Length: 78
Image 1 (cartoon, rainbow, N blue to C red):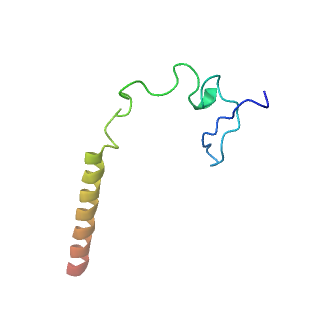
Image 2: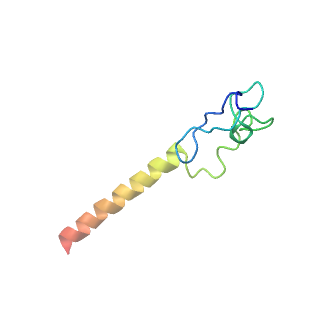
Image 3: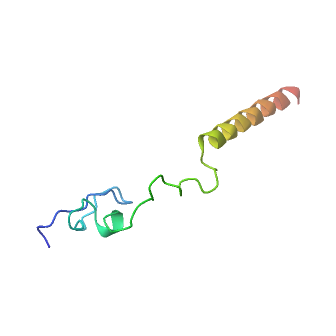
């Protein structure tokens, strides 16, 4: 067990995972080495609600810029 290859995936703490890798794989069972682990082909689960799509992020930036601009104008007036 000690001589088996290690997973090496980055943990939440930022250090490499030291769990043994699954046989014939590069990752441990917790980081994607287990059968059926990971996203499906085409990653259909990536867009659940569209909140983090490029279009929505850009729209939030535009709205934020408009709000800042309107606050500046109101500050100049008042």
